[in-house]
Amino acid sequence: MEFEQAVRRRRMVRSFTSEPVEPGVVDEICDLARRAPTAGNTAGIEFLVLEGADVGAYWDVTLSPERRDGFVWPGLLAAPVLVVVWCNVAGYLSRYSEPDKRHTGLGATEEAWSVPYWFVDGGAAVMTLLLAAQDRGLGAAFFGMFDHERAVRQRFGVPPDRRGVGTVAIGHPAEDDRPSQSARRGRPPLDEVLHRSGW
Image 1: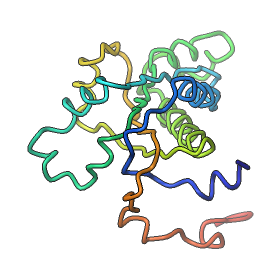
Image 2: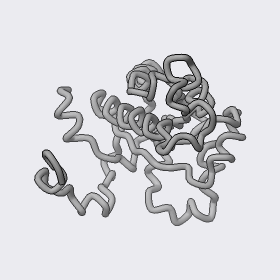
Image 3: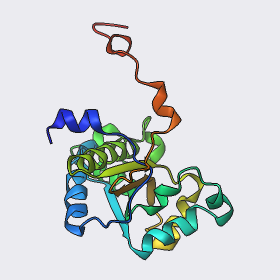
Image 4: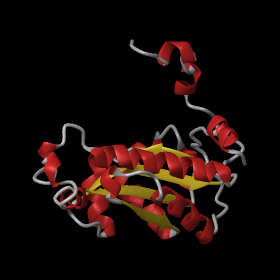
């Protein structure tokens, strides 16, 4: 698929078939996401791939049975692959303590960063995951862990210094997949968001 096609066709898929995704394809998708840009080439973004019973375990700690009964996107739970994206904040502080970055003062504490670029970089990795899935004829959806990050960390042994960016569900789109109501909002025209030589 051409890049422009992948970008224009990409949308969040929230209903999946149970058809598995080949592990090699998942690895390829994550390898591409690993190549997304990171501040100072820190390479501080990591991927926790969940398949099989681990997918159910993820939902067990993030979506209680009471909430699951009325969950508006039940087909999302059928996704055969979940990729949980994490950032290694300590890795950023370490990288910015190295001689070529020390002058920035960003290696001391998280608070030194006016923008926490580990989340910016995590977003770039997420977008790459979404586009790579689209390029391979798969569907994908990104969603946050919100107040379940600690539970996911504990369940899957994620080191305590990692911060969650969110989760990408990947699989084959189901025939009953439907766009969310948010999709009706559309996108503003280019001339409303593109500013040249000033606002």
